[in-house]
Length: 379
Image 1: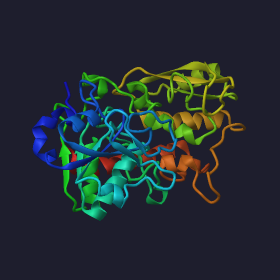
Image 2 (image 1 turned 30 degrees about the vertical axis):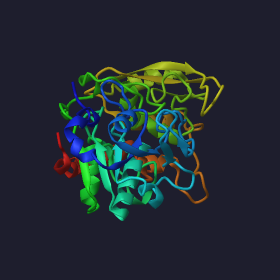
Image 3 (image 1 turned 135 degrees about the vertical axis):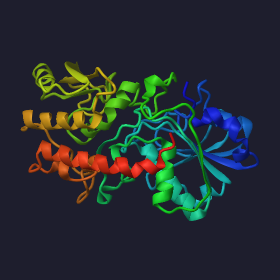
Image 4 (image 1 turned 135 degrees about the horizontal axis):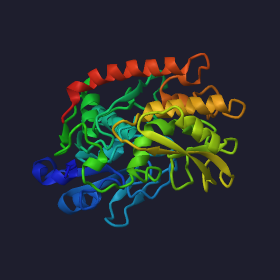
């Protein structure tokens, strides 16, 4: 069985002993026995503060909802928000509450996942204040496979804060090593390594229990689809939020699910099949409206190409329903569209760029990133 960093904590007693600890975590921060890292650290050491990312320390906050400062009801430890309307960063006052900042959140190996933006922002603040930072490393549930383009620096945001590929094939500890080296940081950094994980292993190979990293990622299959289907958040298609299969079902009232599923199956994409989907979202886009679309079924985990499938799907919807399909408008005048922030550049909205050109550019970026990350691979 693969052991995540928190499962190896007893080997690193010297790292934690005698220090005031501030913990950044969420509901996925658990050991193999599903004991929360909050409870483990508060029982063994001096845990003085909890810092909450999106969804809350205990996972009780909805996607995109502002997290308020609070008191953890089970430990009595103050919870300070890193998902505030005005800022997503540790303040100097927060950092003064601890001698070392600890990070333990299950990542899903995708650039557009706000937890890794929180990691990057926390490292920036630790560098400014020369505060110790400790990362409990965790397996990448999608393995070491890399896909997609590298984000352009002009499109950095909290959606995607660091220039990574869309599916970047690193553990969270390896990512911290990359950031630390590339940004030339000097604060004390410790990575608590994973044991037993290999780069060709996906989550089902690890014998661990899946805990939802966020409410929209209920299953491993969802996480595997997410690098491609999260892009639909930037369109007027439902990405399945408000159904039992978020990011697995894609559609809208204007789609013919039967015809579109047959059309997609004719493409014979590797490791995947499509069936018609008929659904009424309970929340989010088209709430309460009858929709049709497709349900994505991964048939071979290793062959499935998450990002490419998502891009081909998006292009197919755009071509088949050109009169109805659309990208969401920017949230503020003069701002960038959410699809551009997700994709990492504006090529995705450029109608003069063909699907072939888009995929070729992404493959070039993938090759570049594979070489870039090699020096940071621990496993």
